[in-house]
Length: 200
Image (cartoon, rainbow, N blue to C red; front, side):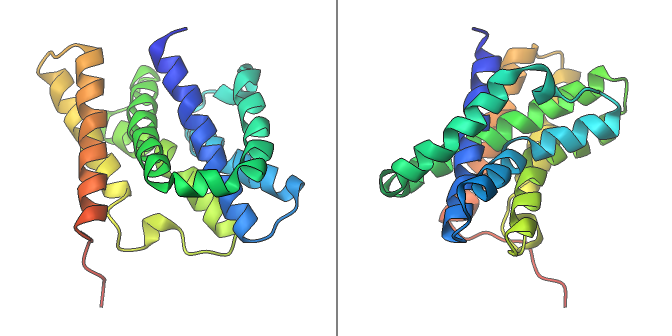
């Protein structure tokens, strides 16, 4: 199995677990939890593909994504206490996920012939808009609208990836470096409570 594909599947599974946990905290039934898991895991990529005209969207062409999302619901239900004890590990996987989805979404947009600026935006959409839909459906203020450094980490990671590619760095090293940068920025922001200033 290709490493990028494996990481993409893993990121999808972790995002689906994240969505299911949110649904459980809101006391949704299993069907409601499955819907939240789905939109969390593939909402950003679906929106990106629709905006750039890449249809059918990715998860409709590969049932492995849907199977993992469906599997995430009972796994989370049965192992919720254990998963909650792994919050730090889940945070790490979630952060790796947003880094990976940012760069994959960015590259897919470039492959569609769109500009680098649009590619950075679409990469960020890929990474964070599933969470936006999840939080909206669960009546929460979406994370990217709070002061936390979240989408900003994706934007800067995407910019770094493009810079490295402009410097003729090969795709894989550039991708790993950019994903690592997103992880670093997001982790430091949470650890040291970095945030953007609020508008007043």
